[in-house]
Image (cartoon, rainbow, N blue to C red; front, top):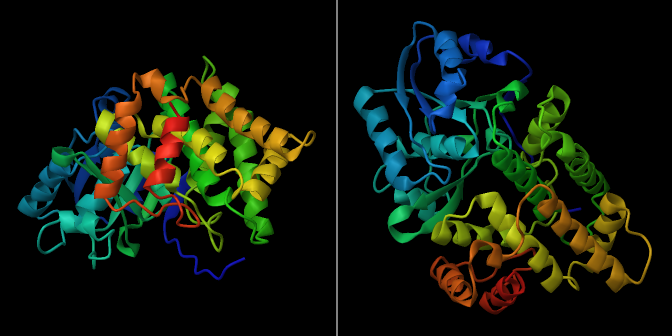
Length: 385
């Protein structure tokens, strides 16, 4: 196991009817900007609960943050923060809204072009507005980490950034807020969390026994609850386990001190930016193909993953690896998410387009070994056709 320094200051308030705790969590003298996405937060009554909990505080609102939050839209929120002299942000929604809040928090304090935040991966962030979150869609884990991904629509550029200044001060997680989610978003959440775990786990052995078992337990949890999560009737047990597992999948614990991959995400980002495919769905396209192409370099962990998560323990190593990759693909397909580019009417020209984007964004040495160059990315994408 490698050396590591784990830090996460986010307070989690979990359970039914926890939105009321905003009355104490948000500073009493705060001038608040509520950030949200579409109309669902209003229709479900979540925004009304938030407004009630905030009481007599000065409160402004900014809606319309997209599923892949755009720089262009978020700069409108930055202008509102500066114009109204607001000093606290509250993100109400899923990972996209929370990612957007992180950018707004950093950009509001940033001198110069805020796009530099993305270009430097967050290295240029020296301070940020405080913010909290009310999570309504479990998927990305953004509610308990310091990462964000923002898209510049003008150039189809989707870039991540991180900064210790953009950890949420708190996150309110009420699983009942997932009851109104459509099946598509629930499926996306399951797959997004699953691939987050895999990216930190399925690399090569470094004798990090606790992280391995923790990751495997989280993966098994997602597989176990998927039928109930996707069932016709919402139930608190499966939704609460989904919400907490998605948070744990990317709050830094399972990745502490171990090698991480993230090539699936970087390639997937380009598919989203170019073709507007949901983030989780791009992951489902890329991961099985990547595992097949990288099977030799991931051999030991693939065999371990197959046995411990999927119970695949018989046959030759090659047969077991094939069965493990197929089990992963079948899991994604079982919740209604296709795993081939052809399912989105994409063929060979899309491969060339994604490679061009990867090259322009400097994504030419991806993966835990830094060996996923453009040639290997081409093979992965062609395998995903």
